[in-house]
Length: 238
Image 1 (tube, one colour):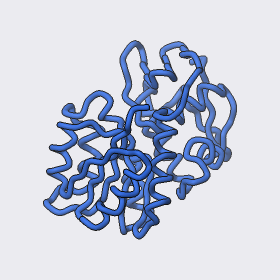
Image 2 (cartoon, one colour; image 1 turned 90 degrees about the horizontal axis):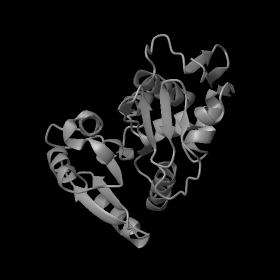
Image 3 (tube, helix red, strand yellow; image 1 turned 60 degrees about the vertical axis):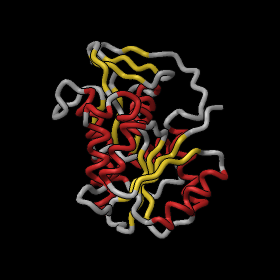
Image 4 (cartoon, one colour; image 1 turned 180 degrees about the vertical axis):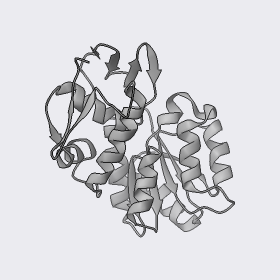
C-alpha cells in the first residue's frame, strides 16, 4: 500500500516533533511547515494526503487563510484542493469551529491533545475520505447530477464540482437513501462518526455549503430539502 503523507503546519517545534514521531510509528510519511507562507509554498511543491493545521501561526497568514487558499485558489486545483484538513488549536470555541467548517475543514482538535488520539483521528478522516476503503458502489445519475463513488467525483449539468471529503460523504449518504428523512444527529453520527466531538450546527454548515455547490438556486434547494422540525431529505426527481 502506498505510504500516505501527512503535512503538519504548526509553529511549535516540540509539538511537530512529537506528532511526527507518532505518525511515523504508524507508517505515515511527514512533511512540516512552521509559518503560513512556508506552508503554502510547501504544498505547491509536495503532495499531502492530509493536513494538520494550526489556526494561530506567525507571519500574518493564519490557519483560516491557509485553508481558504487550499480550497479556493487555482494553485491548489485538483486533488490537493480537497485534501482532508484537521484543525489544531488551543481555542475551542464554537465560532472557530464553525469558521473552519465554513472553509471545508474536516475535523477539529483542541490543544492539549493526546498524540495517540490525534493519530486515530487522522486514520478516521482518511478512511472517510476514501483513502483506506474499497468502494464497490456504482455511479448514480439523476436529472442533472452525476455521482461516482469510486472516483469520488461529482458533476452538475456536465460540469465538475469540487467537494471536500466530508461534503462528498454527506451527498453520497443522501443519494443512497433518496427521500429518507435524516435528523441532524443521524447525519452527524453516520457521516462524522461517533469519534467526532462536534455539534449539530456542523451539519447545518455543511448542508449549506453542499447546496451552494450542487443546487441551481441554493436559496430554494431542490435536491437537499429541509424537513422542518426534523432534518433533511434528498429528492432525486427534480
